[in-house]
Image (cartoon, rainbow, N blue to C red; front, top):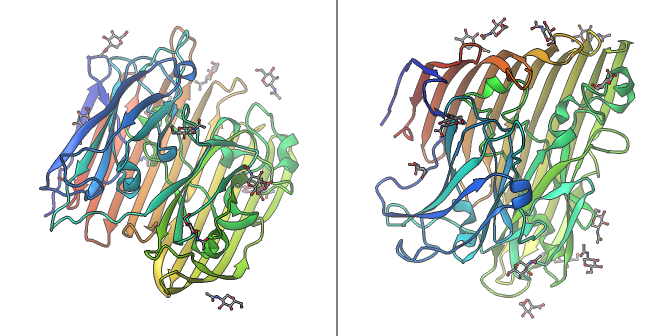
Length: 551
Ligand SMILES: *[C@@H]1O[C@H](CO)[C@@H](O)[C@H](O)[C@H]1NC(C)=O
Ligand SMILES: *[C@@H]1O[C@H](CO)[C@@H](O)[C@H](O)[C@H]1NC(C)=O
Ligand SMILES: *[C@@H]1O[C@H](CO)[C@@H](O)[C@H](O)[C@H]1NC(C)=O
Ligand SMILES: *[C@@H]1O[C@H](CO)[C@@H](O)[C@H](O)[C@H]1NC(C)=O
Ligand SMILES: *[C@@H]1O[C@H](CO)[C@@H](O)[C@H](O)[C@H]1NC(C)=O
Ligand SMILES: *[C@@H]1O[C@H](CO)[C@@H](O)[C@H](O)[C@H]1NC(C)=O
Ligand SMILES: *[C@@H]1O[C@H](CO)[C@@H](O)[C@H](O)[C@H]1NC(C)=O
Ligand SMILES: *[C@@H]1O[C@H](CO)[C@@H](O)[C@H](O)[C@H]1NC(C)=O
Ligand SMILES: *[C@@H]1O[C@H](CO)[C@@H](O)[C@H](O)[C@H]1NC(C)=O
Ligand SMILES: *[C@@H]1O[C@H](CO)[C@@H](O)[C@H](O)[C@H]1NC(C)=O
Ligand SMILES: *[C@@H]1O[C@H](CO)[C@@H](O)[C@H](O)[C@H]1NC(C)=O
Ligand SMILES: *[C@@H]1O[C@H](CO)[C@@H](O)[C@H](O)[C@H]1NC(C)=O
């Protein structure tokens, strides 16, 4: 089956009473097509002054009418938000049973009748959480004040797909353990710096542990890739950028030993660079921020002695001090597989070759104040091996490796007003258990941009971005391998306005996406947008959707 919807030409006038439908390009979750399912509303909530009012919190219980609890073929969440007015982009964090399960961000509203967006998130991999009643929370901190009146009216629904012979129950971990603050009143992400540590005790019959890490830059770290190395920072106005260089490594340590790392993808939020780039096509990752995967199984022999161990998440730069600015929000999930024997797992970590920090270098040349080049490079090699003997006698040889490369080349000209950045981040992480691949992550996240302030007022600028997300990912053996290629190019102009006349901007956004997985599911979309609020129009000259998931 191959569906193509081609070449819609659409022009929406923002003043004509139209609610603009924003979206991030992504594949629809792979779920049973002709199966029974149960949809339950989780909550409906207006995020108004939620910095003060706090998150939406509800008790979520498993449905009883879609087959035995925990035997579902898939579970999805539907987040639908409408907003009308003026508002900044905001971060949204979902936690369930104190485990972060989804990090999202909002679109910025336009004038007229506002915007709506829906994103369907596959949460099948968190099924152990959905089999028990527990606290379900969305923290989406928002501010309502003079000039900011956009309320995020939010509906969240969960859909459970009944399993059948054709659609068997999804594979699931035996238990899920959070690396989180365990707060019941806020989202459970930790703010770093400083490094976040938590004592975790795993069952003594644990035989495998797969970590997933959430991490995003905020505040002075939102544009971390544009931060200037400390040794060059005196050559630019602090009004333009921040110190501590453009390299970031997210680290997971266990009892002070590096277990695995991530070179993060750049998620550009909807107020980023030029807000009019992101109407109606969001930047890739905005609705579902990418996460990172580490096979923690080589540490199992150290963890199964019935005692707590120190799990640490932090984010470091290439500076000698590894310092970053405030702040990053981090959390983690451990998917734990147990032996059927109830006897303790034993074994030995036989190789641990992972330095505390990546190998980094900072170079550059200064011609004058506001006129310099700076380059940061990093490489990372991790190699950890272990022999693991389960209580039931299964011997497993585990090899976990990471081989990552990074470079961030910044040039500043014209008194710092003209910046260019060319960043590449590539890598190959791999884990085998007795020679069988259980985790594999081959990625490339190139990002290049020009950012050109038109004068010293810093009140108008032009910019362009060329950004890709190319990833072949098998996150852990509970899921399947997929390949995603997304390429986005944007350019535009922005003028900060007075309160009376508001901001003006325009932008084009061209987005090409493809998804495929080892089960033969495919999805492609090519969509271009031209957005201008000089004459209040959004045009979609081109939108082509294909692949067998395009139903
Ligand atoms: C998601 O929820 C919205 C709001 O309830 C609804 O209109 C929409 O049909 C839902 N989408 C899917 C795919 O379930
Ligand atoms: C959006 O807000 C404007 C200005 O307050 C108002 O005129 C309009 O009716 C609102 N639209 C919707 C769909 O609520
Ligand atoms: C959160 O709630 C759980 C279950 O009610 C409770 O066991 C735990 O102590 C609470 N955590 C905090 C930090 O209050
Ligand atoms: C972790 O547990 C150890 C004892 O096993 C204790 O000394 C330490 O203070 C605990 N750390 C935290 C962060 O709770
Ligand atoms: C393993 O853990 C179980 C459950 O906590 C406990 O009953 C048992 O005594 C432990 N076995 C050993 C050898 O520590
Ligand atoms: C930074 O901005 C402030 C306030 O707008 C201004 O007073 C100051 O001169 C600027 N600094 C530089 C180095 O441009
Ligand atoms: C946990 O490990 C981190 C990183 O090595 C360290 O900074 C911290 O002091 C440790 N915490 C405890 C309680 O041992
Ligand atoms: C761990 O090392 C000890 C000491 O060398 C050895 O006796 C034991 O067999 C090893 N265990 C495994 C599972 O390889
Ligand atoms: C700085 O970078 C620009 C753009 O890549 C290049 O043309 C120029 O030669 C570089 N200057 C120095 C001094 O390295
Ligand atoms: C940029 O903004 C400044 C201050 O508002 C204004 O004087 C200038 O004309 C603008 N430049 C362009 C090209 O719009
Ligand atoms: C987007 O695609 C159009 C049509 O192919 C092209 O004219 C335009 O230059 C592209 N814009 C960007 C920013 O790549
Ligand atoms: C955006 O506006 C600027 C300034 O008016 C103009 O030079 C540029 O051509 C416009 N670009 C697009 C894509 O509309």
